[in-house]
Image: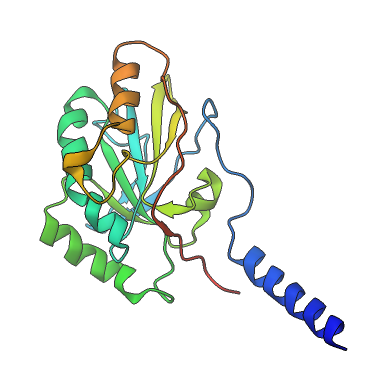
Length: 206
């Protein structure tokens, strides 16, 4: 009887775990990224194809309001946009979390947070979570550096922003900066994938 109970419990836990995981494995470096049309905090729809500053690519970052890791990186994300938007690689931030699970990640709270921090980049809501699942995002923040080739956007880097979330002054490797600098120099990205560190994405529960 005990063995049967344990088996049932393990099955239930497995079902819960799987239901909260994104479908598919997501992108790998070298894959063609899907474009999207998501609502920005100003109410307008934004896509990679219509982003005027994305002449060479884009730095797509899945992030949110409530996650302590996302908050620690906000100033660095603003700095990335300031540095690379003029060079053709603007930041595009996407909030993938289910606001029913995390009310602080609601669209209204996104507007408040962007105004409070002075975001200089689009802050989009992935209401269906389809884009996060397609890209394979698992954490906030989770970065995808895309290089523009013709009308396509190719994934060149996936992972963390740098190697020290807690203390920006102690960063030794700036992964996103290295990737974009490599691309701007016409070189292959030296480190194309690093584990994303942050809060897990809060998927909708069925």
